[in-house]
Image (tube, rainbow, N blue to C red; front, side):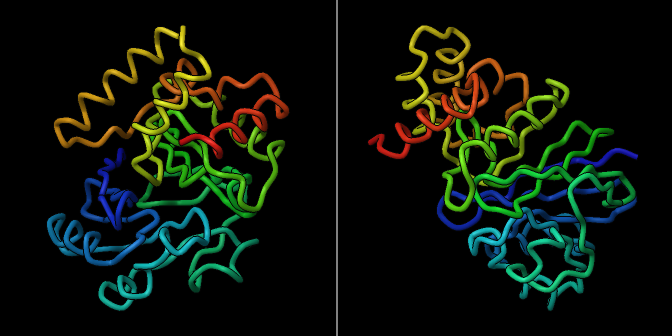
Length: 241
């Protein structure tokens, strides 16, 4: 049974992701605030069954308590990070398969931005909920983890089928594109993607989801040869203005 995914803009530049099953069940990933998510839930029929969390940062969990109170949704997250997450009803671990709206989701370790960060991959639906690990043309800042951990995490995601939708946590594509062009100015796939992003934002449209294939072709972090190269690129991005 397939599920569909829709971006829900939250806060200043966050995305929560609304998942809908044909039988009417609904889940949301990383609700940074309750209001926009509740509006999306009401538009989808007023039912919220499950909240998925990728990591503990407030801009990804800020709406959980209010949504649980309003809809009685269960909360799923990494058992190893439970002490920093809202109370979990379903604690999962990397390497496990979890049932999400009747569809199997692979729990993938994706440390780097934080330790204990996880991603949810839906192989039957070609959907990846990756939080702040992988962005369109970027990756998350190394706030708790190391470049080696981020490199390993991105390698795991790079092994997914190229058509997999990359549903990330922020609208960072414009600034990421400007930086990426300083790393690979001669990459035609990157130049085409940067032009597309400019058009999308000029029209007020979201630039995500992207795909694993698109990121492998244009994202300098996904294209880094090793952890040392990723560390150099990440340091340059941190200093980029």
